[in-house]
Length: 407
Image 1 (cartoon, one colour):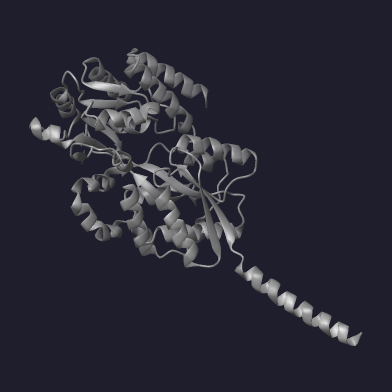
Image 2 (cartoon, one colour; image 1 turned 90 degrees about the vertical axis):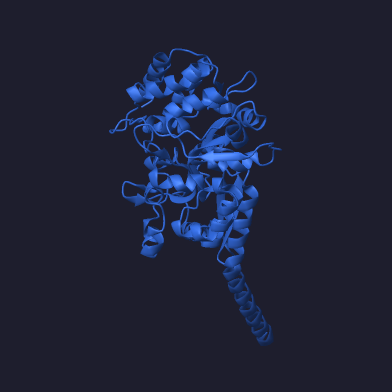
């Protein structure tokens, strides 16, 4: 009996050591939902690098569709109380998530950062993640819209990229022929915001109301409609983005405004011309709204999960991580100091640097929770004006009423 007790005690001791050792090796899983379909390979490589760099956390990525699809899924997950730990929130949706108290406050982690590190970010990007004085978002993928153009066609006609909207209209006319248009006018609120901002206006008021019937908004949409009506632009809805790419690469149109991150979308095609990229034209001021997303952590995650998510973000902010991400995605390097490590890549093709060079003039998109819905009404109004050629003021008044009614 005594021997049996001794053997049992020994076995219990061995078991406790094994369980303790095993528990130490169990990593906290960090589920991560993102929308980087074209960049999924690059995302997975960064995740693998982080997971191998430490033994406390394991990031598990899932590509959950484009931004609109992901936004729908995260709302459903919140309602079902089955959210991921980390989510890539498109910046137009970020204020809505923060306002609804669904995000974890990460302010305590900010205090652990070297001030020199935080000052390395573009101020507009770093500050965007703050809401009501608390840190809810972390910068990662960021971009600005640029003017893509057919450099061969520009040289053939002796044209230069337009620097003002008046020049833009003239260049579009000069490029238009019987078989091709000068410009692709896409009903996209992000591009349109720049046209309004550069005219000195805004799509929202200073007190956070929709501003779709303002002078500058009407002028910007009338400008686009005039290009379409005169035969110098082909209209496309936001849902026809793939057709817009085909219009451009097949030389059915020679200019398009899109995110610098759309560059990789063009690369798979056999493009028979030099792809140019230029800053967007200015009106009364030089300004551009930045796009992209914020990495957020859901409020119902544990302390360990929040810590792991923040550690993953810090890994993404390493110089070598940003360099790899920029080369794969063409997104803007969010830390200024990383530029030195990308100099050779930018020298290979100076057009790649266009979005980065605009960032000193970059401002955030409207930080109003309701704008996530309002911009849909605005884009529908744009489509009616551009494709349906309906009266500009009428469609904008309708978008304004619908936006006010949704508050």
